[in-house]
Image 1 (spheres, one colour):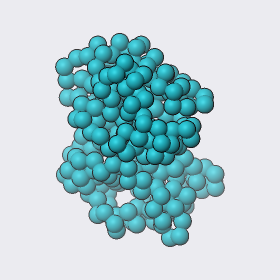
Image 2: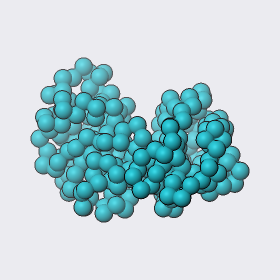
Image 3: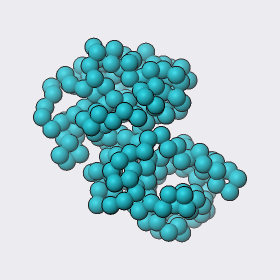
Length: 252
């Protein structure tokens, strides 16, 4: 059920659709997270059905914030990563609202949601200025916030760094595929960070993605100027950011 000071967020990924009620005073989950396997193929209608099942299971009656691994502009998915290509051009906001009986929904990029959560509640909560979150995984996702205000859909993983896309140089998947040591991989990450800090002069980088759990192995090896800190919220960041977005009425 809806509760004062709480909102509901859902994080849609390639393997799971995860959702929970969030206490907006603390950024903590108010109830245990619910996870349902992402349908295969992850078409829009199939995912919308799964979202409806999750919300019904949670007995949540209010608005819902949702993340997608897509660029989202005015509620419309413009790209698709780790979900079906049929998402491209889909009005995700209308789709999910219809699946949830016409209730209010907000849809945003998953890295943007994680960045919002880390900025308000996590690794960057005490930082005043520009915060850039980078998620190192199959690719590199990004979120850019200035004094807590999100600049949506930055997609910094696609910028060119020394003749190569950033994520083709420094995603954690590159480390695994090329069997790079932390030292060699950190040199590639440094090149990406230096290029980004030359463009934006951030106050801090927040490093997310699964490899952030091993932060002590590689963050001390980085040689860029800007401080780099590991993400704190990890698996809950997308859910928390989605809940924040619907509470704040963010419409990227």
